[in-house]
Image (cartoon, rainbow, N blue to C red; front, side, top):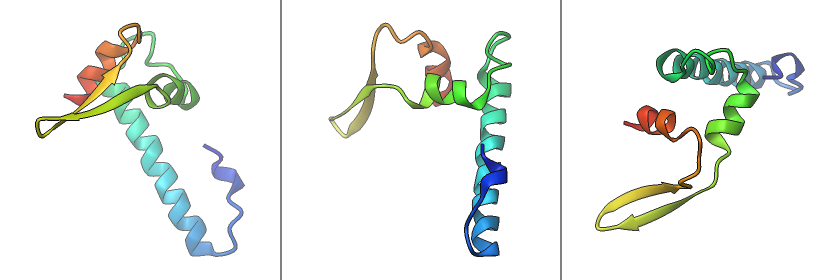
Length: 85
């Protein structure tokens, strides 16, 4: 997560960025503990971003609801749906 490369001029700005990085890392670990199965439990944060965050989809608004449409061939749909419910 590039924690050792904070190059801001202010100490407090570095502190804020560091705290946000730790929050993101702890959320990642919580996701892994709650939703990942045996093979995906050992994945790194870069793999997590590629599988669950950087994915293509459509957001559709209809009848006062918002729906996220994913590809039918998306291989991790079950874990993604379980984490959203």
